[in-house]
Amino acid sequence: MIKNIFISTILFLPHIIHACAVCYGDPESPMTDGMNKAIIFLLSIIGFILLSIIFSISYFYRRAKLINNNLGDD
Image (cartoon, rainbow, N blue to C red; front, side):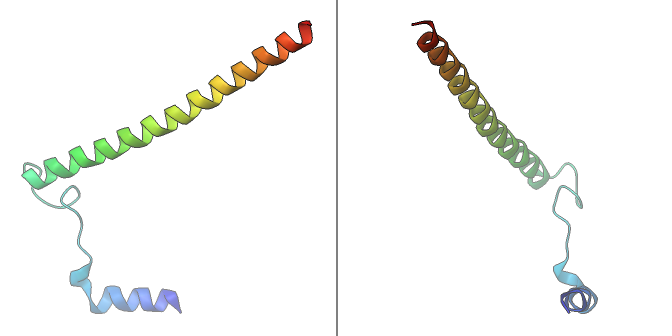
């Protein structure tokens, strides 16, 4: 059912399916440059958040290991 609706939409309304400026358009356009910079910015934000999570987990793991070792020495 959904497949038929999707195919009907593509066949009868092809004007709504356009590629973005990065995929289809002038590569020297300011819109393309802005889109590329936006993609890089969003990827860097995601990378920063993921690295922050990894470092936090690593920090808590090392801290817990140090506390457990100190409690075992008593």
